[in-house]
Image (tube, rainbow, N blue to C red; front, side, top):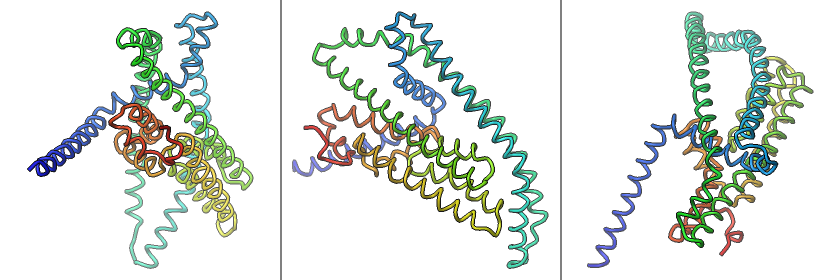
Length: 347
């Protein structure tokens, strides 16, 4: 009888857990307009906290150090945005040439092999695409500006108040418990900073090599493709592949009938494979002891919940969750299952 009751209790717990996961996913996805700026602000807080504390030790007022930090973020973001905007404008001006060649080849193929007249169809698609493009750019621009301002506002409030958190934790908990909390928060901070440093170095290497390769081969807009490779490489596994696809396709239209597209494909894919599919997973997995399967699952889940931002945050979120549950006794087995190597897990 007891065995039957234990079985039903186990089924009930699993059912409740599944319902809870579905409910949390629904809330995170529905309220992503609130959660995404909050999470991004928290990660920026972790990243720049040492810099702000260094300025504080130099007797610089906290509010002044905050404005210095925001100024650095603004200058760096402006420079990157200007480079991308200039290259994107040039690409947009060049795109009609590529589009005409693409449409002509597709139309010839459909007309020759399937006897389908595509002239009217492509005219409609072009006009609809242009309308959708302008509408999408305008809407996304306003949406991005709004989220950016909200993120900066949250970041300001966090920086103005986070130095009080240690005193609050010491007041709220006993000495041993407060020590455990400080250790967990310190590990989370260290993991996120290490992740960003490693990922930035790998992404920079991928972007530089991609840009240099495109420039040497004569592929147009090497700065754009290098910048795109740098940014998309923050997305585990799939980002680098997506980044090199565009210059490879462009080389096919730019150098028809030559070996340049094959050389471009071989070189760029080799860079992507080494930096994105070998070096990146190995360094991330070994440094954070995260299972590659966990990274993939985290990537799919957070991409579904928060889109492109979720893809960027997938690995640091997984690392943070693992650190937290590693310090919770009943849930420690989950952290062990999230690991890549059992030998590196502390007893």
